[in-house]
Length: 158
Image (spheres, rainbow, N blue to C red):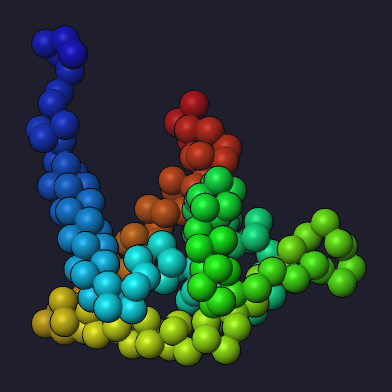
């Protein structure tokens, strides 16, 4: 770093950056502690919730939704499969594609885990007015879209 470069903490948006990162990290930790009695972690919850919402999604589609690589999926899915929470079935039209489905036990655990997640969200966000929550969500979604566009198509300022 040379003398003409600004330090990150001198940037006017640095406080927002740190606030979002710390809030995300702390919420993940709180969620992890709350999910511990169910013997799942937040990445498992992400998978279960998506399979609950999008029954029959492919492994590739799931990885894309969760913004993770196939290697992460190949580590997490067998854990859930071994516990009897999900099953992989070949796509009837393309046998190379595996579709993911929750078992009855997986659906039940997903419902329990979603209730835990809802409780955690309510515990930490209940004092934030709904309009503020909506505004934060809109801002975060816009940032996500800018990041994804940059990652996919290169820096928009290039």
